[in-house]
Structure formats: structure tokens, C-alpha cells
Length: 170
Ligand code: B12
Image (cartoon, rainbow, N blue to C red; front, top):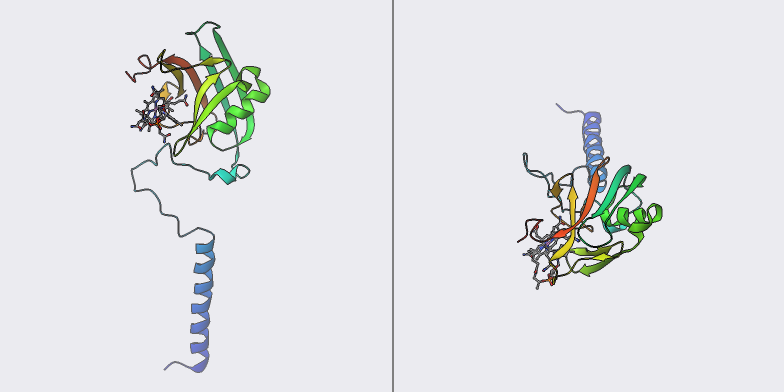
């Protein structure tokens, strides 16, 4: 037999449970689906929304730009420490403040893909010469561009001026 008191306690439990679940859902603790087990999320999926430039954790990233192909050969580097984790483009912009060569980059916006890096330090790729700025992490080409790739703490990103052929795109 259920007494009046235990019925009240039972319905209070239900209310508490409802409140906890609602709070968790609002905080995203329950709602966000995980990628299927054993499958790595795509490199290109944006980890942070565009408006989230101020909420990534602080990380260290090294950017390098190498041109041994076209005239003014150079190897430039920018060591960025304690920068908020966000798409690579923001690190490239930051690099310009500590390493002058990086402040002379040009880019073109493509809908759905973001920014394509046309030139760095005055050296520009072209369809005519079949050259471009190839972006790599270690010796692996990035699977996406500067607007959607989010670097990891301790990562070194290389912008290497090269030909379509040398990069394996021809
Ligand atoms: C051709 C091509 C290139 C050529 C472009 C020049 C040319 N001669 O046409 C070259 C070899 C230079 C190139 C470079 C890169 N590419 Co590319 N490229 C393509 C490809 C095969 C076809 C694009 C095309 O002609 N579309 C048809 C035309 C009519 O449409 P369009 O909008 O005018 O096309 C232009 C843009 O796509 C732009 N473009 C090409 N690649 C990229 C990459 C990014 C990030 C951006 C913003 C723009 C862009 O160049 C095209 C010609 O002007 C696509 C795959 C595909 N099937 O779409 C990949 C593709 C667009 N490239 C890709 C990538 C990752 C790159 C690189 C970042 C690789 C790297 N690690 O360096 C670099 C860009 C680096 C930089 N400097 O910013 C990815 C983009 C994925 C993403 N979501 O970001 C794609 C989808 C291939 C893939 N599935 O991996 N690419």
C-alpha cells in the first residue's frame, strides 16, 4: 500500500529528474551526437563556430612559409604562443604581427570553402605557372583550407610554395 507521503515523495523525484534532464539538454551535455566509434571526425569539420574566436583554449602553434621555387627564396617562421584555438586563418593573421613576411598574404573567398591563400610574402601562385601555396602539417597535406582547419596544440603548419605536380595534384 502506498501512503500519501510516499506518493508526494515519488512525484517530487520525477520533478527533480525532469529538471536535471532539461538542464543537461540546455547545456548540450546529452544532445550532441558523437561520431560513430572507430571513425575519426573529418579534419575539415569546424570545431568552433566563427563567432567563437574568444572561447577556444590557449595553444602554441608554429607557422612556417617556404619558397625555394620562385625568385626571392625564403624560409620564414612565426612561433605563436598562447593563442586561442580557432581556424588556421586567425593564426596566419597573428603570425603577421610577429614575423613581417606573414603580414603580406593575400586570399580569395570561395563560398562554402572559405579563404584560398593566393600569396605569402609577395609570392603568388597561378593557374598559368601551375603553382600554389600547399598547406601541410608535418609532411601531410591538410585536407581542408585555412578557414576550416583548426590546429592542435604543439602543431607546426608549413605553407610550401610548390607546383601542382610536386604536390601530387597533377
Ligand atoms: C583544382 C583544385 C585545386 C587547385 C586550384 C587551382 C586550379 N588550377 O584550379 C589547387 C591545386 C591549387 C588546389 C589547392 C588546394 N586545395 Co583544392 N581542389 C581542387 C578541386 C580538385 C577542383 C576545384 C574546381 O576546379 N572546381 C570547379 C570550379 C568551376 O569551381 P570554383 O569554385 O571556381 O573552384 C575554385 C575553388 O575550388 C578554388 N579552390 C581549390 N581548392 C581550394 C581549397 C580551398 C580551401 C579553397 C578556399 C578554394 C579552393 O580553386 C578553384 C579554381 O579557381 C577541388 C575538388 C572538387 N571537386 O571541387 C579541390 C578542393 C576544393 N581542394 C581542397 C583542398 C583541401 C585544397 C588545399 C587546401 C590543399 C592543401 N593542403 O594545400 C589547397 C589550397 C591551399 C591554399 N593555398 O589555400 C579541398 C577543400 C576541402 C575543404 N572543405 O576545405 C577540395 C574540396 C578537395 C578535397 N575533397 O579534399 N586545389
